[in-house]
Image 1 (cartoon, helix red, strand yellow):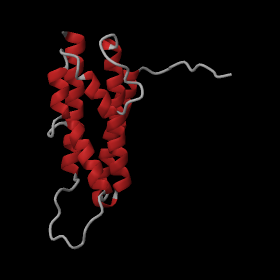
Image 2: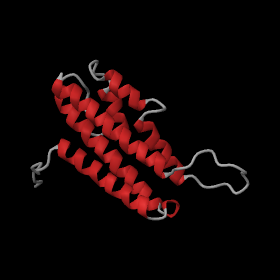
Image 3: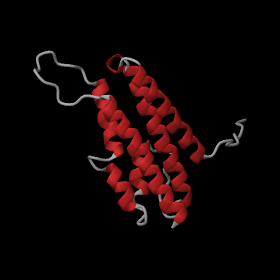
Image 4: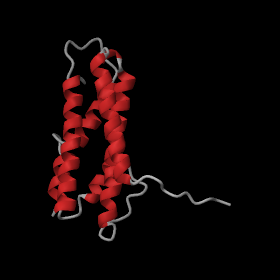
Length: 153
């Protein structure tokens, strides 16, 4: 017999919690040796992803009658589906573009997992504190723009 779990925390609160956690991790990265902290860099990115995933779930609840189910999708695919809502399309598609926060998260993860080729003279891209701070700032701006659009308009 399976038991039904009661959800104790709202998606909006989880999105905020993961965003706060990512900010705490970034502050610790600033204090330590950034280049040696790959696990913490990855943890930072996963927290940002989780924040965006719960924000997507919260947004989906408002428009669930207009959209396909996003329950089994990852955070990026959830935002692709939610971008079908006309009122949110411009805000979300901007973050799915090459300069958007979602693409920057994916690029940063690829850099962490990339194997360095010692035969190359130069590296193409690196993760640094500036990039992670930019990701955090873009995530916060995206969240605020989305919430202002949903709750104030």
